[in-house]
Image (cartoon, one colour):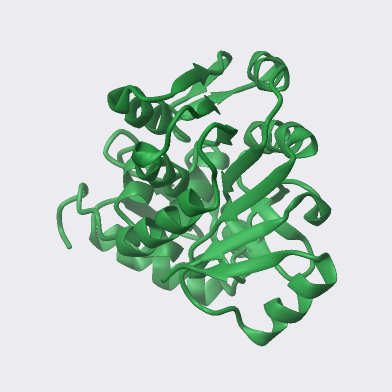
Length: 260
């Protein structure tokens, strides 16, 4: 890869880029290894691939983003593991009955869920995600409420007190979230603290919470707990769970469905 807009980034590369952004655009190798819960050697290999693609610049002991505009995390996520996310989105859509109220977050998989809801009737959609809102507006078949607040371009949506106050005024039948990682000890994880604040507020009110999560997220780390595991009713993924996660999900009383 030589073009910085090349979309075919691996999950590890996207995760490292997101972490760099959360650190203000640069970080030491040791710090990245700690935040991602991987070895420094793994970080160096990932950084080497990103540097070859022109996405980061290496310095002694660290790395920094070379072009933040070309490295839109939203665009990277939407173009990473697309087939898996489409399958997950179709299965999530099957879990949502017409006529219900649904919250969709800013995640890339959730954006595909928004597109998969085109055949549904009379949904009330509450979202803080720009991509989800645009997809639903284009369909023109549902009531769509977009949360105000601070717009964060890196996540493609709104956060903050205003967004939380807006979304929590609704009675939500089903909340759908994408997450950045699933850890056996910490549960469901996100990278951005303000995104997690909103997620916790919504999950606490929703009648049912679904996590749309491709298999690359299992075992991946992110620094912030999105919401308590007890808030999650269903996880939809693209591959069967590893035995350790099957056991842990049973302890958490979380159902898992594998998208066909």
